[in-house]
Amino acid sequence: MAIITMKKSKKGIYLALLAAFISGVSIFLNKYAVDAIKQPLVFTSIKNTGVAMLLVTTVIMSGKWKKILNLGKNELWKLFLIGVIGGSIPFYLFFTGLSQTPAVNGAIIQKTLIIWVAILAWPLLKEKMSFKKTALVALLFGANLLVGGFKGFKFSQGEGLILLATLFWAIETIIVKKALVKIDPVILVTARMGIGSIILLIMSAVLQPVALNKVVNLSINQWFWIILTMITLFGYVTSWYTALKHASATSVMAILVGSTLVTNILSAVFITHSFNGLMMIQTLTMVVGIAILSRIEIKSGLDSIESKLSPII
View 1: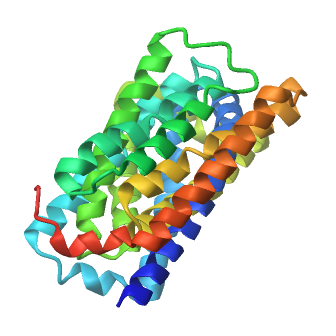
View 2: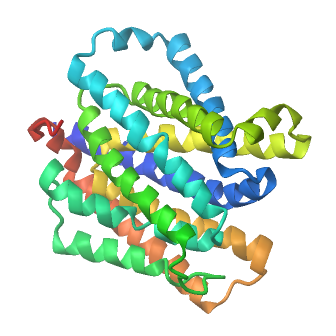
């Protein structure tokens, strides 16, 4: 049993590492995409709808849609909540904020997600943080401040919107971890993106009808950015949700902090053209911290707490 649990934890860690890499690339690309589309709400609505269509196709082709028929009211309610709390409102907040804020600032604020998840996971998921794990999480988050191109927070409206979006995603993470006990991660992701995209399209039609009507007139360059960010979002959400299925929420979210490193390296290569000593320290700190945290997670097999969970919804 212990061996099986350890293998599941290892799978969860590998998927979390993949999600972190994709997230880092995605945040970097989304900054360019938002600048190209100009309308954050319309951009995220189109992108998320495309991802939802890919996921619905996956669920139908794989036959997993049959599992939805066996879900109870409690599980269906969780699917709806995930779509609203995780797949719609925070996307609007995040991309609106990102259009007003440097990509590096947005990445750092979004990575406070581990702090909020850790606070919520202790009472709601019974995930206890040891001193060593807490120190590693603090170290990983602290390394975010050693960023190339980061000039400090402006405490602007854009940064506030990104922080609010992050709080929504923290709540989503807890609900998802609970829901994964009985629901397939692909179905959860599909609900997140499907329900979320419907809400975003309605919001676009109400708040920015003129911009939404101009979708058919988007240039090839704009469609390029939409499709590219669709691919990264699809890869991120599927790997992230599946990682949560096999590893503890706090470990998965802590590893996702490493996505900032990917964003910073890309920014250094393509924007600042500088890789200084601070970035080297950040890189080594994150790599070592994630390696130690991953080893702790694999050995402890914290995902076994799923059997001890009690419903919160």
